[in-house]
Length: 204
Image (tube, rainbow, N blue to C red; front, side, top):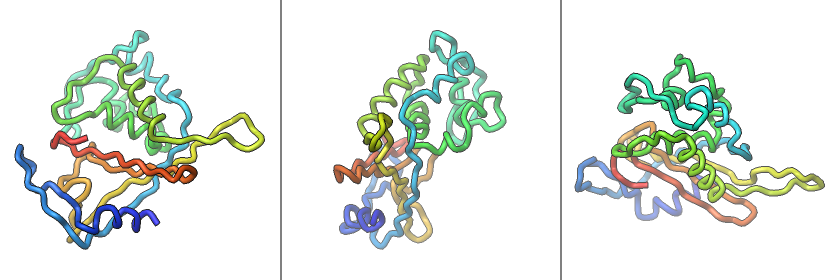
């Protein structure tokens, strides 16, 4: 159903794709795309997993610890939080296990911390966690479990890409770790949110 839904929304008139990566981009319509959909785990109900950042990558005050600059692909890693997010083998990478890293909440946090090409990092961890908490609440729906006081996430999250001639064309023709597109489906209310970002183009 999801591939059909994406094609209905985007392929009827083709994808609007940036091929130039310039200040004045040229957008082309691309037909006959293969839509690739992958499920994204979405089970977390709180921000508790980020509490372990205090005393490790951030001081007790919430100020993020700085570090010597290094590179991960095209990103400049300049603080301990970014090392925890990206640098495998660093002293902080194991703060989060692989299952947690796949969660939609963690992905949102990583996307927001990374930001865009011209964004300036924030020194306060709470600026990131507060923003992500509110964004997550806006995007994800929960439902009370029958005969229980507990709740569970009911939203279904999908990572969306489109390929044409063995080349990624959506969300961008240029692959980057912080270029993404998600569909968040509420099957109860029958609502769908689309969240996407193209790194370096200035679109969010």
